[in-house]
Length: 326
Image 1 (cartoon, helix red, strand yellow):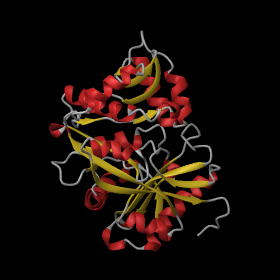
Image 2 (spheres, one colour; image 1 turned 90 degrees about the horizontal axis):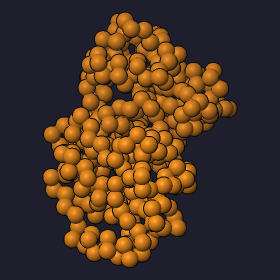
Image 3 (cartoon, helix red, strand yellow; image 1 turned 90 degrees about the vertical axis):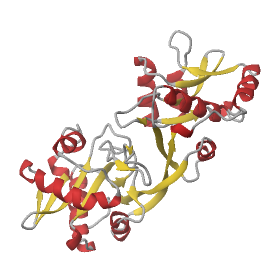
Image 4 (spheres, one colour; image 1 turned 180 degrees about the horizontal axis):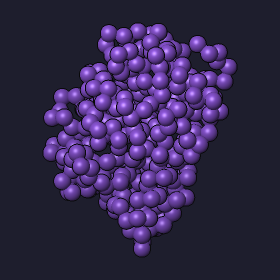
């Protein structure tokens, strides 16, 4: 039977997760991390969380909704669908998927999404490392049964995100960095840490990128004093990379990198990112991980810094407005 979440199922969910979800590289759960990722999230709702129960927890599905989320007025997000190995069939997957979709539609949502804007972030281990972790899964892991069954459930793969990794022990500023910086200075550009007494124009710059995550996080960091690497011309900020934050896992947190279109073509993106790597290494960050679209031009910058691809995730969507109940 399928039931909504209740605290009495927590031990069973954790056991299922640590048996099945870990096979796709997700970090193990305990009561504290389950609370942090799921229950204490402001977007956790019992009506979006389902248990498939048969003499124990054999399935777990969680989604989230919120009108204040990117696309939140029209979309519900699927966070995860986990099934015990012996019942990993499309019919059981559809039972849980349908439960989530029905809940989304009752809340007025027109789409079901699996994508990086999901605020319930699932950490996963980076392959071929000493359990280095990335803090969020930006979609369905390509090759997983989650990905395969989503396709069978009529979800469309909209794009793929490439996860990349760099051990900062091996990072050095490319030899031509200083020459490029001198060339930029001749054009009145500078690349340094943001200084609130000196720089201006961050909010206006971020609006041009039309990226809600960047607008929220980078604007907040520059206002609360968290270091961000910026490119500026005559003190006006025209690009950023960052922020400069060391997480408890030893990872360097990364929101993104951007340069206003009218200031592209001078190598600002490369310098911004190299300076970010240097700043993170200087605060004893052990490694960096990030994800980017496979066709994003910035992937060349990441590779030039030494990053290597480690995993792919699919961004998925299903239109719900005209769907009949399964």
